[in-house]
Image (cartoon, rainbow, N blue to C red; front, side):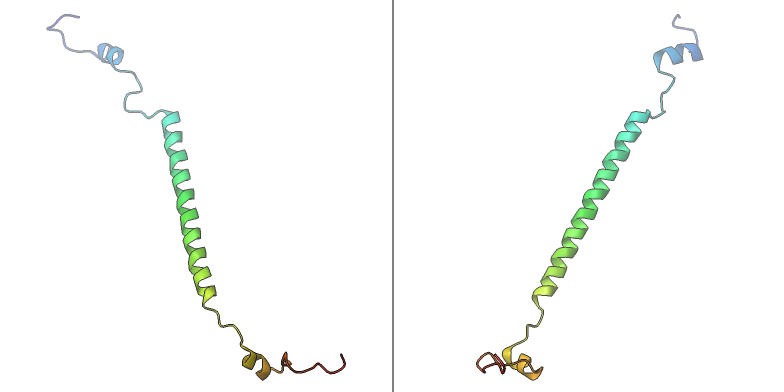
Length: 84
């Protein structure tokens, strides 16, 4: 090839690989694996946040007092139990 000749397809294909512009399978698979890992990590973060929110709401649960239990008919701890 000399300087004045036009560049032919054969010369271009020898300079650049035939797969130019085409993505290799391994790089696509790698990107898919990375995306899958990122999505899985995001799901874990979301679940963890949800569990934390649920545990905070559980902490605000009303616990029955002795008066509440007496109102439901449970015996008072100070009174002796009949038949025992």
